[in-house]
Length: 195
Ligand SMILES: C[S@@+](CC[C@H](N)C(=O)[O-])C[C@H]1O[C@@H](n2cnc3c(N)ncnc32)[C@H](O)[C@@H]1O
Image 1 (cartoon, helix red, strand yellow):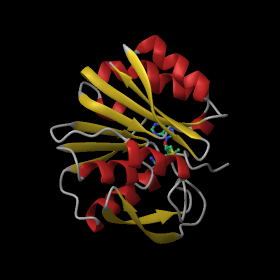
Image 2 (spheres, rainbow, N blue to C red; image 1 turned 90 degrees about the vertical axis):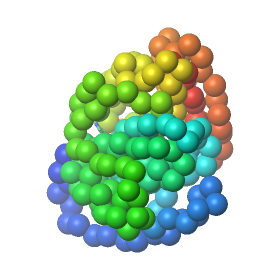
Image 3 (cartoon, protein in one colour; image 1 turned 135 degrees about the vertical axis):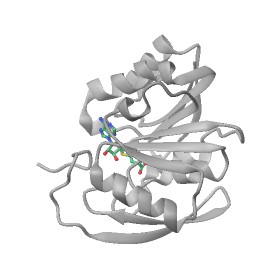
Image 4 (cartoon, helix red, strand yellow; image 1 turned 120 degrees about the horizontal axis):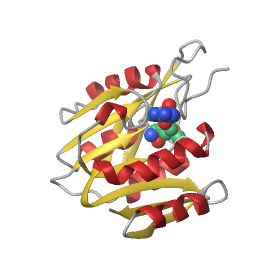
């Protein structure tokens, strides 16, 4: 079966361009069948990108980038962004989206979870995690994040209030110095964990 988190989606490729305004800036994204949120900006992602904490000098990791919206929005406000995804179609579409948004300070890499950034450090890891991939994947993302974050670095996660929020918040509280809820709305919450 093909999911948005398959390595190689087997659904025929269809694409649709969307235009969105986020944090006062205009972006265009190619979205694709077989890649998360075809034809639209996901509500959870929207809450995250409008509220995520960003600082000018930051190096940011967008883990599970899909067509690339989180990393591309972040790239306008920070120093450098690495975007990763396990889905090869997502990686290829996100690369195209870097070009059409004229982004020069970001790159997209293919691979599983933190493998593509082994040994690298970030000021923030920002993610709309693949909830449907299962609890083990969510757990891997949260418990390993501190190894890739500088001291005081921030893991920022959006999660559906009634589909994993309690679990994620609990895991973050066990693995981070401090956890704050930085936004809520449309049935989602955004948590920030300070390493
Ligand atoms: C909920 S989607 C979010 C996509 C995009 N960031 C957005 O907000 O529109 C989660 C993404 O994680 C990717 N993913 C799933 N399992 C993964 C893994 N083990 N390693 C890396 N990425 C993964 C999926 O392919 C999908 O693109």
